[in-house]
Image (cartoon, rainbow, N blue to C red; front, side):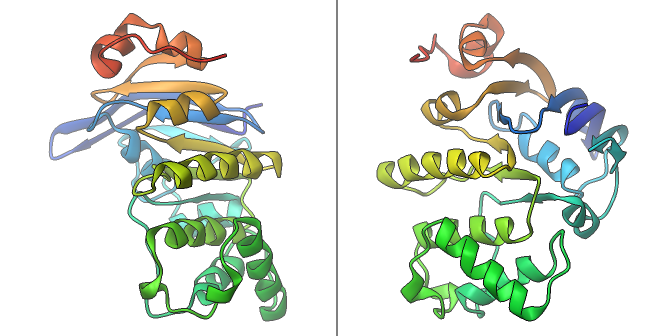
Length: 245
């Protein structure tokens, strides 16, 4: 039984089709990459899985439970959490207070003491500078914000983590570190569905890749299979992409 199944999901906005009969599944312990050109429907699909949008048709099941249309806080309590391309924070709160919120309102009930210990644990895990724990979030740099967002998501104790372009705004060294962190998170027991536009990152870290174009799934397979698919080359890559083995 897959951890997550998306079955025939469609979504339109004011008559404009964002997703059309999309199907995908995600196995426990897998990293699934989701790619496609701008406007392909990637973020819309993430928003449907996480409960921000309700699909017009189709359903989403998680651990064999129908979660279609559930509010985000209920979906989070079941074990799905996400990050955003543009980091969402409580800017006037400190770094540790932001992560404490995730620990308190995640998938496991915790006392304030337990939540504080969990917040410290995940901040250390993602490599957040411990001398910045009491810094107001509005004063953090991009790299620190990205780590903070990951820590807050992990503080909810997710079974499935949805990453929406987690390397956006990072320099090459920071992006390389982010890839290592994604693998580290998966190795800790968290399954990952990630949207990413940098091909060397998505091809290098994903077990499988799903490609969307104009709201429809046009390809699915290993990085090598997807890179050699003519429809993917024509609609997205523009030229053949070599996957190093």
